[in-house]
Length: 637
Image (tube, rainbow, N blue to C red; front, side):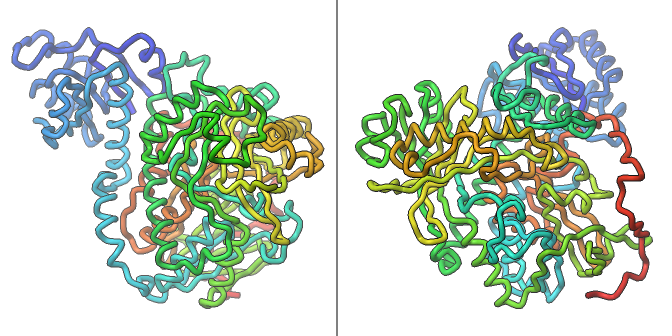
């Protein structure tokens, strides 16, 4: 995306306009179309002809002659003019198009106006590239349609879902309710058999706790003005130095992925964060609707509503109140003395363990119990479940459409539609897709202590700036024997393309940091748990992450339907599971959904450009069996 900014940009913001091709040229700005300055207009027109921007950000209305020249030099490429105005009322009075066929959008003036203008332009161009309706229109249309959907939408079509993590199981549950015939393939053992945790992926391999809040899965790029050489360095440093790089070895794939993370500019990160939170809000509505319509599915999964967020730093606490209010999540806030009075389980915490607390909308539950419940319900509804069977290759017919899936057992599965939730182990299923190579692993660690009396009733989010375990979830849960426990989940460790590529000393540092958080908040429970800080064999799981920090949603043709990739949701897979399922349902029915646009795998690259291609995989590392494209697939197993 090429952008020409004609407004004055404060120095601190100008230094952060990195990524893509952005030119700040206030010297070319026009004072207004009414001035009739032919010379200035000609200079601007010449600059537009030379730079060929997709976006022009301006305070003045562009003359018709400039607009016409811009449209001519751009040919069929989409363009948008973003006006920066002083009067907020102009936002509602903006026209849809200017003379010359250039779309117009409006933002209000302010120090960060250029950031907001670029974000608005990127969203518009994204919709044009993906042939999607504007996201705002998609949301309103979606809300109108959903109550009228009926079971039977699937018209007895078959769907093969690859992956039995919680996201794909929620999707499978929705598809079954809409009349689709579902088969689920999973590389790991049946979760209900309770094998050792390393045998499973993130959903079952992680601990029995998941959380929904309106600010889950937030973007981790810098969102405030930062000089380019200081921006987005989380993956450059190990956890012991307050970074996330836990790699034992760094190869070309990891270097390229980190480079892709580093080049996301703050204005684009802000746009991503807004879009993620919009999807969270939609998902929250769907969670609530599901719980109300089918309460039996949530019986006995230890559902707990409302989350207490604790902040160790006073400034962070003050900022947190504003952030949660802006997100529509704020229920109440508490000074430290009030925290200790109203949440007596926290009275024993270290005196400086928190500077305050914020109660927010959300919920937690025991995710292993929910997974078992969903699997039982799917089987009862006639779904076929196949465990310990890894999908190896998506076979294509001569037209390039997906015709079936071959597994490592040599079995062939064919369906009308295919839904791949790859986690961090399913990269082979992303071959020949735009999503290929975009998902790497970021691990999180787990620790449990008993929930001693007085019991903690609300699950927690704990923020500790400048600490290795900076963000921690503390979930009220119970163990397999029914005993009350607190599950700590925290830490970020980038494992790259190989989820086993872990520096064990750095992993121990994360575990020790989580133990420190548990000790400061619940000293008696910590002592009773007899934890060994830094235990290298303590539990962790590897989460699917993208360099853009957005999830991925890609739809490709299958012989009789669609092949959908839905994954890479970093810390938000569980939180966004219902809205992912809704997006899949729409994709299979050929209907639009905002996620199809917002999580399109080319979104970041269409703005920032493609990275150089990674080095090809040596032939000797490829699977021994070569499988050609097929016109007539093998029989269905």
